[in-house]
Length: 360
Image 1 (cartoon, helix red, strand yellow):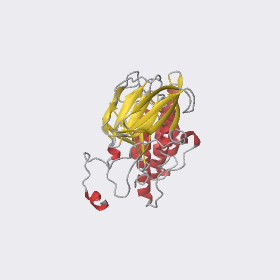
Image 2 (cartoon, rainbow, N blue to C red):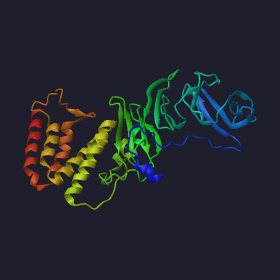
Image 3 (tube, helix red, strand yellow):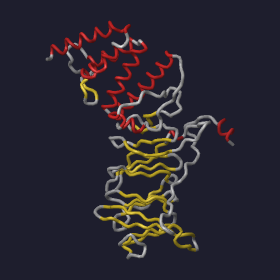
Image 4 (cartoon, rainbow, N blue to C red):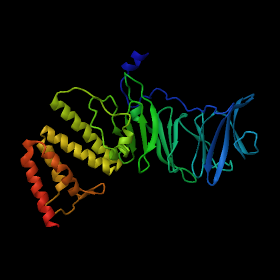
C-alpha cells in the first residue's frame, strides 16, 4: 500500500489521508470535567459520553452543575446523539464539537444560540484565539474554517483546503501540531515536519513562514540573541532550526543567504520589526562575505533612498516603524568586513555622512 501511495500523482484535488478526529478522555472516574467562563459565569461542565443506551443508539450528556461535583444540583443539561469531542468557550459562547461533524453553540444558561453547525467532516483541531474572538477549526479532511465570534458568529475563511497538509511525502506523513494566530488574527498552522504556514486572504492561498526542518536549503544559522529569540518568527521556528551540512564554501554562502532571505520576508509578513532588523544585518553580513556587490547595492540603495529623501509611491523612509537611515548605519559596517568591498563601503559611508550633515 505504501508503494502504491508513493506512485500516485501529486494532485492538489486529491484528498489527504484522513486526519484523526478529536476525542475527550475521561479525567474523572467515568466522565470528563472542565470549567469555562462564559460572560460573567464560571460553568462547572461534566461530559458523559455513552451516558445511556437507547433503542436508537447511545445518548451523550453534557451537564452544568452548581459546584465541581457531579452530585451537586444541575443548572442545565443537554443530550446529544453523538459523542462530545471538545469543550471550548469564548466570552459569548460555550462551544461543543461532536463526532458526527457538528458544532453546538450555547449560551451560559444552556440555550442554543444557533441550530447545530454541520461541517464536511469531524473536527481534527479546534482552537479559540487568546483574545476569545476567533474560532479556528480544521476538519479531518484537511479543511479550514475561521469564524469571528460575535454574538452570532460570522465566517472569515470558508471551507479552505489546507494545501500544506495535502502534500504527498514518501518519507513521512505530515500532521497538524498546533493552531495559533498572527497579530491580524489569521490562522497559523504548525505541522509535524517543522514547517509553519498561514493563510493570506489577500493572496487567496497559504504562505510558508517556516520551511520544513529537513529542507535542503534550510541551513542551521547562528544562534539568535535573547532579544530576538522571544520574537514571533523565532518562536514559530523552534522545531525547525535547520540542518548542519558540510558544503563547498560558495554553495554554503548561497544557501545561507537564501535561508536568511526567507526569514527576512517572513519577519516582514508577520510585522516583526526586531527580527527584520536582525535578519537584514545577517543578510548584509553574508552577502559581504560572498562578495555579492550587486545585491548589496540594491539593499543599500533602498535604505539610503533618493537624494532628497522624499517619500514616493516606490520608496518609504520607514519599514515596520524603523527609519531606513538607522538601518543603513547598522548594516554598513558589515560591508567593510570584506576588503574587496572597501570602495563600496566608502561610497555609501560618504553619502550617509552627507545626509546626516544636511539634515542635522
